[in-house]
Image (cartoon, rainbow, N blue to C red; front, side, top):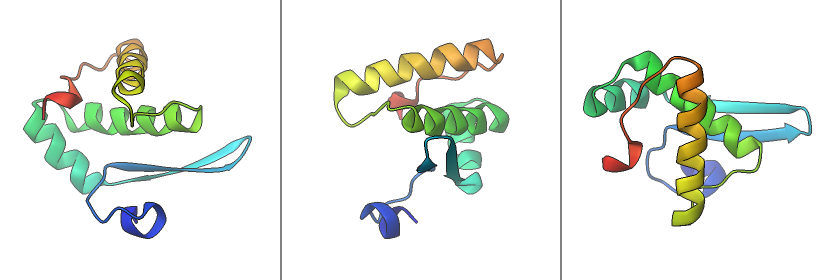
Length: 94
């Protein structure tokens, strides 16, 4: 899907499809969530929650291409995940 819709053949964790002003679809790789959770040392549920939050932040206009934007997005992810009771290690330490 990453290659088909975004022109990038590499594996990804979540793709956000904004359908209209009120609807969004998230395509989440459950397989990648299992792999990343093991590698990062946190639970599968925390990794899955990260993907959902990340995708929804994209739908709300956040981006993570530029380093400054990525830092802002990571802070927003952490804020939401903490409020939901999830603890994750930094995803940029991979």
